[in-house]
Amino acid sequence: MVVVKFCPLNVMQKLIYVVSFLCLVSSCDYLSWEIKSKNFTLELNKVSQIESRSAIVSGAFDNPKSQAVDEVGFVFGTSPLPTIDDLRLLGNDINSEVEGNLTGLEPDTKYHVRMYAVVEGSIYYSNERSFTTSKPTLTNVANNSCTNLANVVSYFKSANGSSAPWGIGSSGHSGSFWSAPDPNGSLTTCTGISYVEFERLFARDGVIRFWINTYNAGYANSPPEIIVNGVNIGEAIEIGGNTSSFYWMQVQTPVIPAGQNTIRLVFNAGSVYWEVGVDEIQFFEFE
Image (cartoon, rainbow, N blue to C red; front, side, top):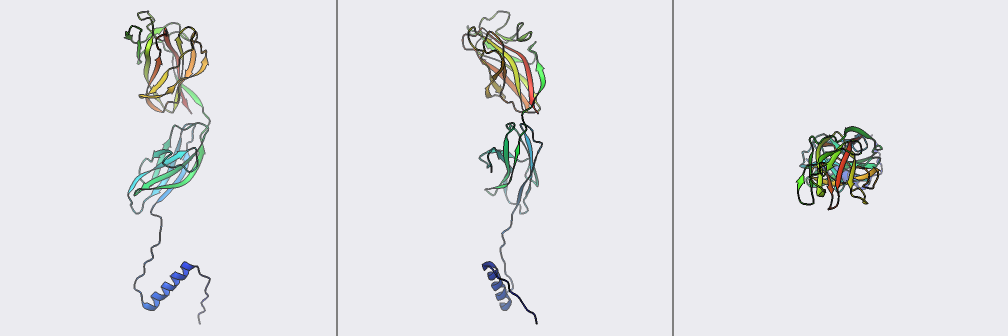
């Protein structure tokens, strides 16, 4: 004799038991239960190589049912549970291993990151990880003492509408300097827009520091606007020297992204400046 012990059943277990019993007594040939399961795997694995301005993120994406996938990537921000309305980075490819390089981050700042996928028009998110970028460390990687204008595009316009390239002056912050107007005196005032432009490869995000003098007696030095690859990223800020235009002032650009960049320093001299000078350029990168 076989004794069968019954344990308390919840409602779904009772339903399954009853249907199974009915199939036994009525000789059911087939019974299909639709069991919902994951159609794909979306998992953020790790955050590595965390620096002051960047971090590497990687994750796994598995699509066993070959659903239509529009995007796979990462979303990140300074608030928990970032979405595609925050910062977004497409993954390197839609395959099982997805990796991305988060750049342009703020130093010494906590970030939250998740993987995301757009599958058949719906958005899905992975687990979340957080990390903190390192404190900013700037390394001086190159210098230009402004003794010549080789590989530099320059322009200035005088009060009478004449224009010409910059020249080399002899009384800069340290020795010679890039000078507008022409130090030989062929033009007398530097008015309108005056600029110098040059190419620079940054291995990492960085900044440029340099000395300026926008000589106009009784007025402050006027920092230039910084144009990178045709985009105005803001005005240089004072970090040293003297604000008075009787002296030289050191300024620093906003952060310039890694890569090959065309950088233009633009001075809006108005109608009164007698001289615009740039000297002792230093290139720094974040470590």
